[in-house]
Structure formats: C-alpha cells, structure tokens
Length: 221
Image (cartoon, rainbow, N blue to C red; front, side, top):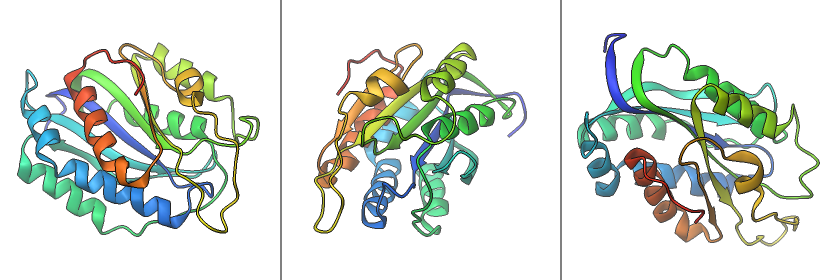
C-alpha cells in the first residue's frame, strides 16, 4: 500500500497485559480478538464502509515504558485479509507482566496513528483492559492527560473494561465500573463497554468493533 492509501478507519487495538490481567484472562482477551477479527459481523462492517477497508494494528501494553506492536499496520478489506491479520496475531504467546499504565498505552497508540501511511476518515484507539483498585495506583502520567492529548490530535479513544469475577486464589479488588467512561474514553462518538463474564467477551468485542467501524454514536454498554 502506498502512503496515499485511503481507509475508512485507522484503528489501534491496544490490549492490557499488565499483572492485573492474569494469563488465563489474557487468553480470554486474545481469543476474543481472534474470534472477532474472523467474525462475519466484523467483516461485513468493514465492507459496508464508504471505502470498504480499514487499517488495523495490534498493540500490547502494561507499564509506562512497556508497549509492543505485535502486528504492524495491515489493511483489512475482506475475509482473507482479516484471516491473515488474525493468523499473524495468533502465533504470539499470551503474556502478563508489569504495572498498569493506561496512559502509556494511549500515548504509544497515538504515536502509531501519526504518519502511518494511511489517509483515514477517523482515527481510533481501542483500549481493552481491567481497571480495579482505588484508581490511584496507575503507573506513568495522568490517564486523563494522555486521553486529552489524543483527543486534541483528532483521535477518538474507546474502551472495553473487563470486570471478571475473581477466580480462586485471585486477589479481590474494588472495581470502578465507570472508570473507563469517566477517565479513559474521549473524542467524537467515544464510548465504553463493560464485560463482566469471560464468555461474553467475544460478543461484546464484535459489537464494539462494528460500532467503531460504522462510526455511529452510542451510549455506554
């Protein structure tokens, strides 16, 4: 693809792999993304856009200096290109490491949206992760500052907050159910979903991606 390639959306899938996400929940996230990327609903949403293609990259983040672009920018326009992206993602092992820095994930993702070789009608950071405790233990700079800087740059930040029931032996945290809505998301048409059961993650993600690609305003889910 040339530097002049036009797409409906440039989308960063930014996934939390910090220590608050146990490997077993990390696998739920990864499998959810693989299922969503391969779903008919997702592919139909892509093809229904004015241009009929989007640019996507997949990022994992944890601490302020711990972010990795697992799958570089790729254009998805049909089932074959979606499967190629999913297959490239699937080969990477699921990890869990470090403190939680949503601001680091947003800042890294916003940088990826600059001069990435695509002319996009909309630029979106899709943050998924678990936010718990008392909201005062985040590593790195202020989450809202990172969010506000992204919005000023014309980027929309959406969120998918994970609040799974604690498994045996897992520390029970105080979950702030509206944290993503108040502190993380921002920009035109921004929204946040909350997922409370592992078995609901794929379905919520498919709906979220479809709404993002469609560009419609939606309330918090």
